[in-house]
Image (cartoon, rainbow, N blue to C red; front, side):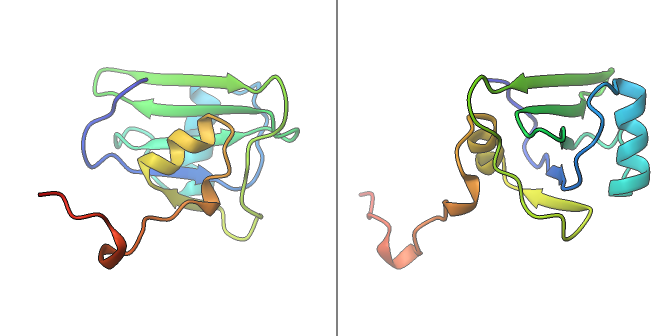
Length: 117
């Protein structure tokens, strides 16, 4: 598992993109569609039209990193195209990358959490 600095935010591009794009093309998508700086240190997640392939763009302080994953069976769970971007937690990103429906996961209210002594 790849770890990121605390406070790193995750942004999901809701609209599918052409995943033949590399560093420069996806950086341009971040700037024009998500309207953020691709060199800000946050994660930007993109998906292709078929839904079985994602790419994650990340600036680690010394250069751009591009991570990719293709599911052999099934598709990644993606929100409807309502907005251009969606903010995810790092836990939701981990579920998304595993192909799990991250939309159905919520933390238990504090009153229902087990007390650790």
